[in-house]
Length: 344
Image 1 (cartoon, helix red, strand yellow):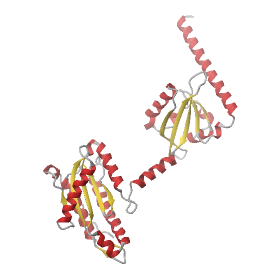
Image 2 (tube, rainbow, N blue to C red):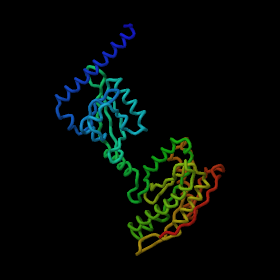
Image 3 (tube, helix red, strand yellow):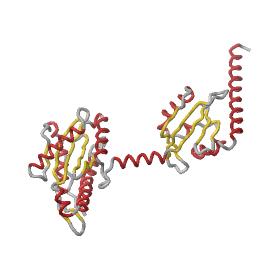
Image 4 (tube, rainbow, N blue to C red):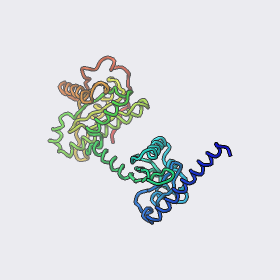
């Protein structure tokens, strides 16, 4: 026999012997642990680089397969295609390092097709034979849902359901990371003589007025967002505190945003608010500015819009005023205001 063929034969025999040792070790381990592995509340896989050697009952439920059918399959077969690169790197690190590896938010659909999220944790096992890792799958679907709910609560105004100041700032920070969205316009506005509304009609009526302002403003913004360029992020409204509101409009010229602000002002002033027992009219004053989030902070841009708002207040209220730092370039690009709506 040629030496080359002899070496191939020896390598094949060695690989077979390693696999036999691994299988024997696995069988021995399962016997010693008995039913414990099957009743773990976490999915457990014993995984070679090529495929699964063992899966407990929880893992079978997660992957929607029997123990026998899972043998030889790969965890990558069950995760979403979008995560192929992440999970491939996870396996490479798991088999190439003695450190514990972890990857979050592995998406695996259940038997009904509903996508669930899992945390996958891998560690090498000190076994003789072919390299083997154990992979634990922990269902974190509810955990992620709770985190999302808490995040939403922390960025939402409880009275009106729109963004609060924190949500507004976070959205501005997101826009600052998008190169094409750094330039933006901001509308800052508040209710004229709102204290008088509360004193005359009561705080409950004041709350109704604030909710109605949000409803009317977001109706206009929804139509504005529908007609904008598809790649541009949406304009967003936030209640900044009390009777103060702000709107951030990505990739918008000052003239476009001023027309949008005027439409909001006219719409709010044009219809009374209140309950069926008592109605009253409200008005708002608005300041408009532009800024570049890659060069200045959102606080600086808000300050400029706030100065324009005070100019609107000082010049008679129920007005829209552009900030002093708006230049000619910011006044280009026309926007056709949408038609007036009748509120029912």
